[in-house]
Image (cartoon, rainbow, N blue to C red; front, side, top):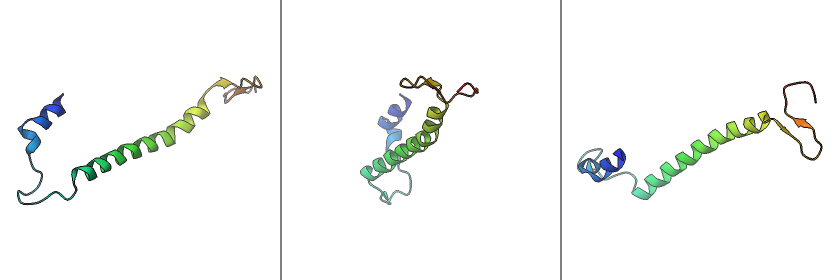
Length: 75
């Protein structure tokens, strides 16, 4: 709600930089950069955590009835 208020109030028209300068990137380029950063963060997080979560999962193999990835020596 606060960000919407800032975007649609007078604060949303504040220019970052000098008054006569034009922006280096247009709106589509800014969106593409922000989107790719969000995707990159998701890939880095999932790329590190998902294999560890699958490795540490304690489940039983349904076909062979073997406990998988357990810490005890009952295998």
